[in-house]
Length: 315
Image (cartoon, rainbow, N blue to C red):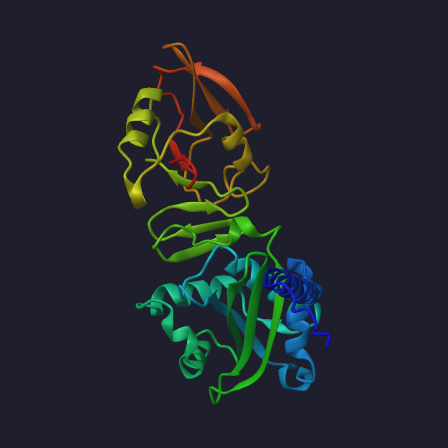
């Protein structure tokens, strides 16, 4: 009688591992095939929410806010980008959207406790009434593995507090990885100006570069006085330094505000000290009238102001 030869145990294990690898590879490819680049994903997300609901939303005032990371229940740096993307689609489709500044003003005045309540549709509806909305679009997001961000949004009827539409999408994280973190400050947002966000503690953040700015006392001072002020600044965990000329040049926007820079940085001066020196007698200032740096006597007060800057990577 001939008996069948039993397969070697190592061969069986190797075969099973190969099958699992193929299976997981297939699942990963399928997941990536159903995911999108960030801008495209937000557009598809919003269009999906609107699908078959356009009749309910025409003529309604829509507020978009409170999109947070679902585990930490905080707004990561990506939050305003998701909200702005949704707003752009709504506006392009002809819907009426409540201005961001109005929403931020009410959040500053009314929200005293964290963001846990943003998960409660009825409380979100109550806040929607405060900003004059008929419909609120809110939601959350969470990292899905290492390469995907799953974003979920829902539309809430302010009248009865009920969710009447929802949509989910997965977006690739390779181009947005720098924004997948908290903004690093616990202070409330008080205003926005393009890529700049102002906080109640006086910090102004450039969400494009990640730099955080603090305007110093609005008076002329020497370079040493400016350096002393910056070194003594312990605001929001410290880590502040004097800016370099390139960083100050990044603030320059001809025709913007009263001083060719974002009006969120409050100053009446036209020049700001940098941390760049030429020996003990000279230092560079940035001239916001014309938009360039120049050398100036470090011992003169003249007109230069002090700004402090930091990056979360500085420390």
